[in-house]
Length: 44
Image (tube, rainbow, N blue to C red; front, side, top):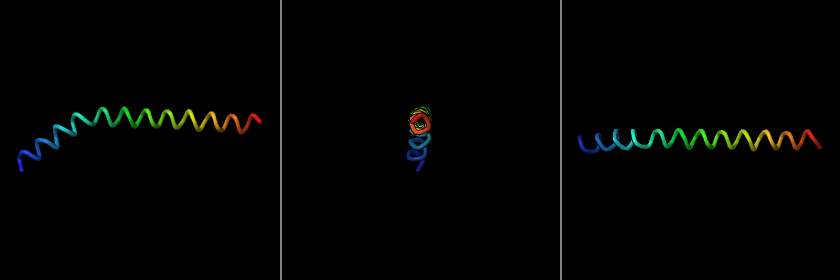
């Protein structure tokens, strides 16, 4: 029990910056793609 709890905390601590960075990257890419698509639609 203590070992799994320690692993959970350790993995969560190690994965959380990666997860937030990846989420931010995906959100940023989604925003850029959405804005560029909207711009293309409005421009034509």
